[in-house]
Image 1 (cartoon, each protein chain N blue to C red):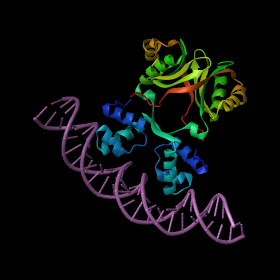
Image 2 (cartoon, chains in turn orange, cyan, blue, green):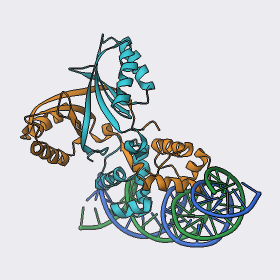
Image 3 (cartoon, each protein chain N blue to C red):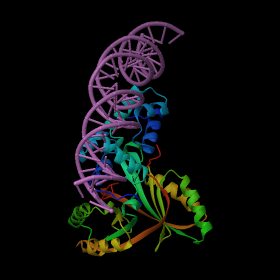
Image 4 (cartoon, rainbow over the protein chains, first blue to last red):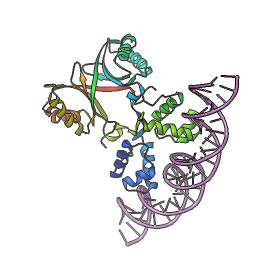
Amino acid sequence: MPEALDAVDRRILKALQRNGRMSNVELANEVGLSPSPCLRRVKLLEDTGVIDQYVAVLDGSKLGLGLTVFARIWFKTQDAETTNQFAETVRKYPEVAECYLTTGECDAIMRIVTTDLHAYWRFQSDHLMRIPSVQSVKTDVPMETIKRSFELPV
Amino acid sequence: MPEALDAVDRRILKALQRNGRMSNVELANEVGLSPSPCLRRVKLLEDTGVIDQYVAVLDGSKLGLGLTVFARIWFKTQDAETTNQFAETVRKYPEVAECYLTTGECDAIMRIVTTDLHAYWRFQSDHLMRIPSVQSVKTDVPMETIKRSFELPV
DNA sequence: CAGTGTTTGGCATATCATGCCAATTTAGAG
DNA sequence: CTCTAAATTGGCATGATATGCCAAACACTG
């Protein structure tokens, strides 16, 4: 690992997590460098993969995608084939924003984005429950957002 | 709602969700417009709040923050005061990336980012379980990522 | 304190954002 | 189908920004 982040790097990361489209000149001012070395540091952070990507965060409620739900999945069996088939299928659904295999109580967790509860129910019964490896699903529906951040505490 | 998104707007949103730092010239080419009206559309999408913000997405594993866990919380009581106190406290912890109040089986769901299981355990016992309103916590630990996207299917 | 390697700041140039205006396209009414 | 008005587009001029290069400052080692 060639990275040893110093205080300036951390300030850069902090700033770009808050505003990924900030101009390099503005960023340089904020972290106390001139534009030239600032840009070089940013490029290095990108090249080493510390900065993975830049994204625009959309407001789902303004796009008819106001409902986020968390679903826990239980498999019928936990063999590799079952798991692979599940993964392949899940990756195709745009409704599934995130999906992880877990150890412990359940076998997988997903975050799913849909229009409303009705649309979610349709997705669950028409698609999720029809994946052969899926035995059962339990859903938790967020009613209110207390905190929502994509930032890592660097 | 003054927004009626057409096909070009959707292409803009799709592109900026994949690369939020794309230059306007490049974006214009990709969506089949000249830079001038393209920029105007982007600005409108920002002003109306469809585009909420631009962020840099970091790789937690390269920053010593490799573990993401999901925790379900049960409260002792569900009155407004309990809830508010919980919310206030949770918002202060940088480890807590997301937190929602839920209806159904549990009372709240959180996504928590830490260094490793040991650090999580410390956070749970030293902080989470000491919030007076919290009765119990169940944790699901992702072992493998099947899908991870911040994109909305526009 | 000299030498070496790293990081910085400034500068020149190419690319880009931005605001304005004329031209084109679209939508609606007669 | 035609005319008109409104909305949207493309091109252009200007100011700001990114980018690569070089010399100077700095940090570390022997």
